[in-house]
Amino acid sequence: MTTSTTRQDTAPAIDQEYCDIHDAYYNPLKDEWLETACDDPTCPYCVGRPQRPSEVKKMDHLGGPDA
Ligand SMILES: [Zn+2]
Image 1 (cartoon, helix red, strand yellow):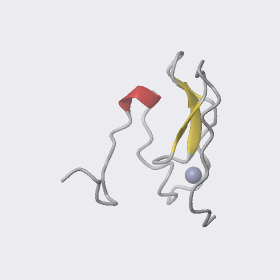
Image 2: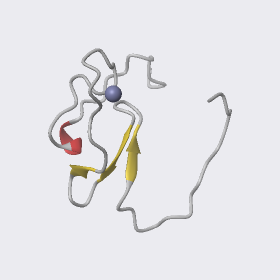
Image 3: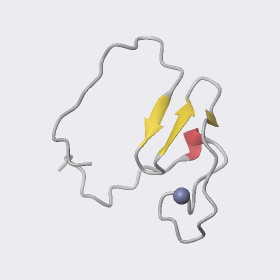
Image 4: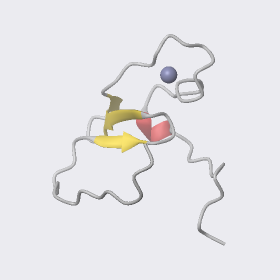
C-alpha cells in the first residue's frame, strides 16, 4: 500500500493496536497477539516475534526521526 497519510484518531479506549514491525494486531491491555504468526520461516515479520507484544523491540531499521 502506498497511501501517504491515513490516520484514524477515533478510538480512545484502545484494546487493539497494530504492530508495524511484526505486521500484526495485538491487545495492549491483555498483552497478547490477536493474530497468530504465519508458517513462513523466512517471513521477516513473524521471525523473532516475541511471545508478548510488550516484548517487541522497536528496531529503528528505517532510521528513526530522532536525531
Ligand atoms: Zn509472517
